[in-house]
Image 1 (cartoon, rainbow, N blue to C red):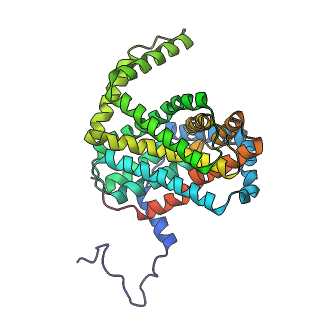
Image 2 (spheres, rainbow, N blue to C red; image 1 turned 180 degrees about the horizontal axis):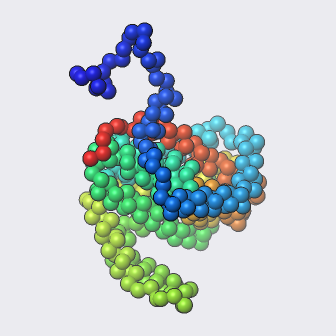
Length: 367
């Protein structure tokens, strides 16, 4: 073994360096996986960065009262029993596991370790960086490629994953219609579980129909195209949207391959367990609105989370979700507390897991 080998045994003499602590390993992992060029950025890129930082700062300032209002409810955290907090943590863990399963199916090549650590690291960066979605995806791509994944196939797979995940959350409000017509509340834990089971089954069936048949997807495209053209009469008419949706659907199926059914179930599980976390938070504090109304509020919050001018939709999600829960019949105080608990598990707790994922990410060199 050569002297330059990184796997050589550490020296034991008096001049040997001190052993690395966990903090040192995390710091070195960050440097290894997020290394950037030290040359000055081009003026255009620097100006764009300054612009987006300014927009982010102004946006956070505007929504800061909502953030303070939501987090001001932390004093009421004692209304949650330890078992309810444990249940919400378990539901979020199941949501993450579903997303890992989806990525494992779509990426084909990387091992579970590379999939899990890259997702944790990329997700954490996306939640703290302005316009973080792109930066999080770039970090995940970098880690996957360093672990041996093919660059072009990784880009295609990550794109397909993002499309499928976001398309599912856009389609889920349709599932609220039967629940609203039927009525009812989640007055027991079993009713909450049945609501989640119903969403899972209905979303799986809806996804299977859209992925395997042309008619319903083309109809969705025609409706969306007509609606857009009526709303924007002064713009050039949108054309061929149904055909484009069908082409993208076929491209998605080609990427997923014969295991598309597993990918669909994993996608549905990712959102169902996340939705159940919000339902569990409401049930734990004795609030029992209609599941359909909560589903609409949940889907609206996920769309707000895509707003790129604050990291992870910070502030917009808190303000929007608490307001929509009030419209669903939840009292203002309970809406703020449930929003706080939901965001605690879905937004804040995954941040330290990102550092752990970065530290444990497999090494290697980019091909």
